Image (cartoon, rainbow, N blue to C red; front, top):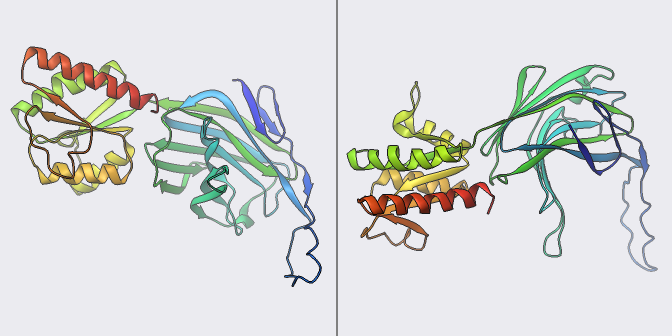
Length: 324
């Protein structure tokens, strides 16, 4: 596995070591003469921060590692970097860390631009930092499914978060650290899973044919697992299961030919989750006001119509999986 340091200092051999150190705080500038000074409590030092990414690309799947802190304090942290977007330099990570003395967290970082300030986004914090021990191996494991992130420490699920925004389709995995001393990362692994598509449509012979002969076939070409509501089994509320599947999906395909309230509810939920949606409709369908502005792939019940909708669906799926 190959590693590249984004910032901080790492040593990569068979495993990865973060070289932590104490960073002196910057002394604030003196206030101008005559200005009213407000006392500021500034720490005398900070731990060094660092992030490194590897050559493994994560769409959905599992990232794990064994982590050892040589020393611990209130700011020591080691998290699995689950989504580094090279274009925006934004990060999503989960692991041992957290503010205000917490033990673990799921959070994101967006660098500043000319239009927007840099910002941290905390999705989950929990546990007590008092339990963190030096020279002890902790097994960290995080699972990414669509917009959902679950975190385990030593085989125990400790955190879960449903992100309000979709993750980039292709994202690089790695580690994020903060410490005044070394942190040792061992047995780092990335296990990717196939992307998922959730299909929203009315049930019936004509729609079943579109689903089985067109949608399933095109998704299969792209190694995308596809699921429709009538293929879900087990106890629980059906609407709750649908919401979970939409949250886990990388894309949603919806046929809005009939004005079915269930279909429109699920499309609205997918829009609220900011999921990429491919809308299908039979040619001649009069779309309602709130759907008409969206790009819709119209199809015909004919041999030529089948090939055209297949080609259009390929283009949409290609664009979504490429992250456009």
